[in-house]
Image (cartoon, rainbow, N blue to C red):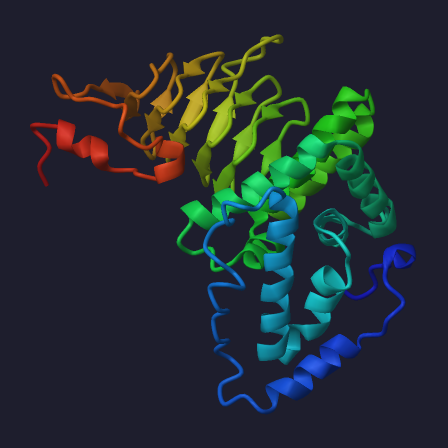
Length: 326
């Protein structure tokens, strides 16, 4: 935790940091403390077991198990992991604490932000469900995501989306100055700029996330994956409904720009660096500047294909270019 940032002590357990020191002593007996052993599959399986009826409880259990393993393997992180994960009784409290310490400033105190985030997550079960869906999405789609705790603690795209969800609640409650202040802090800290009025679904992956801009009237569906430097913007000074609408399961490649009140249909794919100014039909691919649609082969089916936003398949459309050579 950054030095000088006040802790919300009222919400912390009364135990001391002995867990951190105990972890350090255990690590002295390890032959390679810098290379933690993977947890057994029965402790951290790759996906929730079918009998699990509570994904939040299951994911939180995995996060704590991973944090204990990492604290034991890396004593330098033991205090951080104890303060951010292991000392908290639930995922909402851990996330609220972590976001508060990431986004606080000398005039926007971490204790205030902690209470704000926790109140929103407590009052809105849909926000907690979206947190879990986003964690599962990152773990499933990003091969660089080595665990749920890694995403919770280190993925700024994940953290930016969770902060936006709270800002969106504040916007809907007409607490707009605070919502805009939170948007500004997220942009400063994470380099992700999402207007608090924008509507964002669940199971969202902002991969790398740097430079993502989502405008005020934009709508992003469920199971969408967006890479870095993507803009969902307007086309001028007009007011009203002026930003893109992104359907479920869409994949938007790095550096893509989508401008205006256009519809990107469910399961569409936007190639990296593309500039899209018109609607893109469902299950279509748009590439280039200006973007053009790449059609399917005659008779090619789609019902068995995975949604691009979940499969993260950026290049399968190349097989449809009969003249594509290097």
